[in-house]
Image 1 (tube, rainbow, N blue to C red):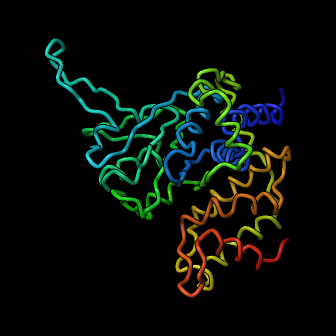
Image 2 (tube, rainbow, N blue to C red):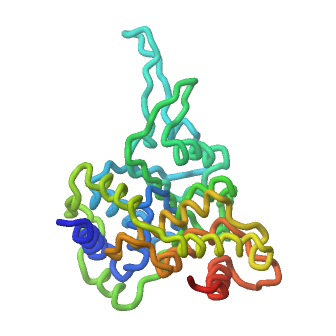
Image 3 (cartoon, helix red, strand yellow):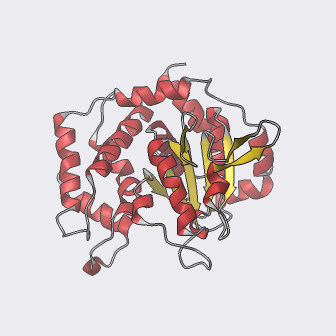
Length: 306
């Protein structure tokens, strides 16, 4: 199979398990191909955990899940050294972060100290435990879920951690036809158990390398810079996008173009992923009267196309 056929096979398998959520499934695949991390914000029970597990199985990656709770400690994620009397030495026991796909379930129910334990892992692909730095497996992909802030027992994620997530999406409730399929079909757990990897070992790395080769013209780069400049103008948001945010936005647009079967980035690719890549990084100005996603879309409509 060529690159386009491989990606379409991945999407087809995921859409069989996550019924009626094709745009969100595409966003997840875009995020993984771009090498970023994904934040899913929604109420419990809409399929966040199922989606994360299906992604790992479809891409043939190791998967680990951590349920974040108020008493979860950083060492519960990264691991701990235990003294072995037989060897007369401390032996490191790696935590669940040493995997390829880590599901941080309900991340905003843990304390800020534990939330911050993920920062180094997400940014540097390594962890420092007891003075030693240990590399994480490659690829390393964090899918974090969080409940709405109005629910009891939640802590808001700090801006520094939100910035580590390439995308934030919401699954939402299923449409009537998709929910009927859930009610009458096999359970999601049984469907997950039947999933086989679509990609062989090393093929994800090839796809991610192909993303970096997607061409972005000078006119397209001007368009991305116009968007970044608009976020910093003070008209739309209190604080604009950082240079890092602009870089990852362009990389996500390259991944979107690859999924569409093109070797160049079009303005449509940028627009397709702009709200998911930027809304969680910014706060709308007070007089806007809109949420961050709606404000991003309003700003996008006001920026001329190249």
